[in-house]
Length: 208
Image 1: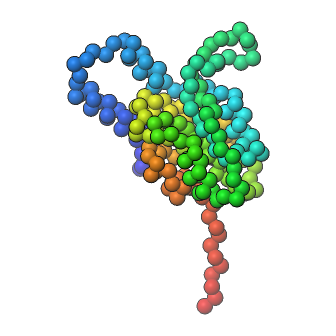
Image 2 (image 1 turned 120 degrees about the vertical axis):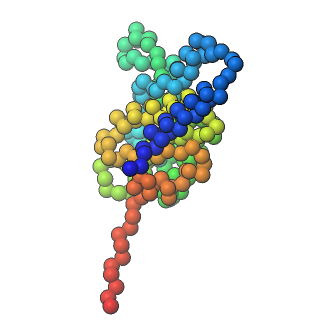
Image 3 (image 1 turned 60 degrees about the horizontal axis):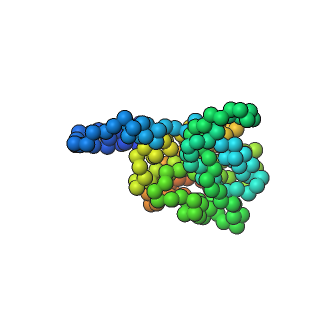
């Protein structure tokens, strides 16, 4: 069976880490450095309310794509002003409005070009539905893990993506796609892997 993309990424990351450890280094790693690495690899603990609200209202507000990034120092408390706990959260970084005149594949290319950075891991929530008569949106979760980004940040993104599944009322409308280079960001690949493309019905058989 084919290994899940997240598992493949984690296995690759562990192999690279073992390789670097085996290669050795004369520099001693101190506890503060280790602590910074641990914080960098930590997954987000919750979802920022703005990201939650934007995703739920995306269809009626004409939002095509949302970009989520991990931020530190986000308040974890609720309405209680005395609750000053802070932590890591998935926050709304940017969004792209829907172009009703464009096809889904054109929208996917545009959103990836406008929202993704070459050295910044992030999670894109791409709304893959058009004018279908369905009660909820179909979402493609793009885990953008660029090769130029620090390993700890890429790993944190992978570990945090599970939080977004709680925002989808019908889990079967959320699919995942992993990309590490611009060449991977093709709708023909994403839609085939995640089976999101809306196919036209086959033509009627011709009479002999």
